[in-house]
Image (cartoon, rainbow, N blue to C red):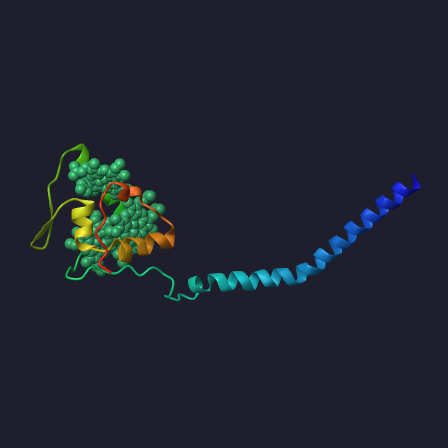
Length: 145
Ligand code: HEC
Ligand code: HEC
Ligand code: HEC
């Protein structure tokens, strides 16, 4: 009986010591964390371009199918519209940009100008961790480099 009590006291005292340690370490861990998070996010808040996506613009083309700001935020919406028009409505009416015409098509439209999936689409998608499943069926352009 006495023995058990002693054990309990011993365990309790251990627990208290641990707690004391944890509190003590907190003094180092918290500033440590602040510095760590600061370092990890440095490229984001410093505007350091090193890690932000840099999609390579197509050469020989001035404009996208819609203006750049729209494309940046809404290209997936446009792709869905094109797909629905082509697949559901059989509407393959081509789009005109300047004096050129392009197919309303992922492969033959978008990728006709944006010839590198890797250096254009993936550049942003990898950064934001988006993985469009389109390429399971649609053929991506052959990467030249
Ligand atoms: C006629 C050639 C052409 C076609 C077709 C085309 N693009 Fe573009 N795209 C461009 C050019 C050129 C730019 C750069 C425009 C600028 O800087 O003002 C651009 C810009 C973009 C941007 C913005 C990039 C950035 O840095 O913000 C996205 C996203 C984009 N295109 C996606 C697409 C998608 C998706 C399709 C198919 C639905 C498509 N483009 C079809 C030529 C094209
Ligand atoms: C300027 C950066 C940028 C470029 C360049 C870009 N994308 Fe995107 N894309 C995004 C972002 C960000 C999302 C996710 C948007 C969201 O989650 O709302 C996205 C989403 C998508 C989606 C929807 C995927 C899903 O799972 O919802 C498709 C399809 C897509 N992109 C196709 C393309 C294609 C094809 C190209 C190259 C021709 C391209 N994108 C180039 C930034 C970009
Ligand atoms: C399961 C296979 C499959 C997947 C996955 C798929 N597609 Fe398609 N898509 C097709 C087929 C088949 C057609 C019809 C082709 C035709 O009639 O020209 C088509 C047509 C299209 C068209 C119009 C014509 C063309 O040649 O591009 C667009 C735009 C399109 N898909 C976009 C997308 C996008 C964007 C994604 C990913 C978010 C996607 N598709 C994923 C099978 C697929």
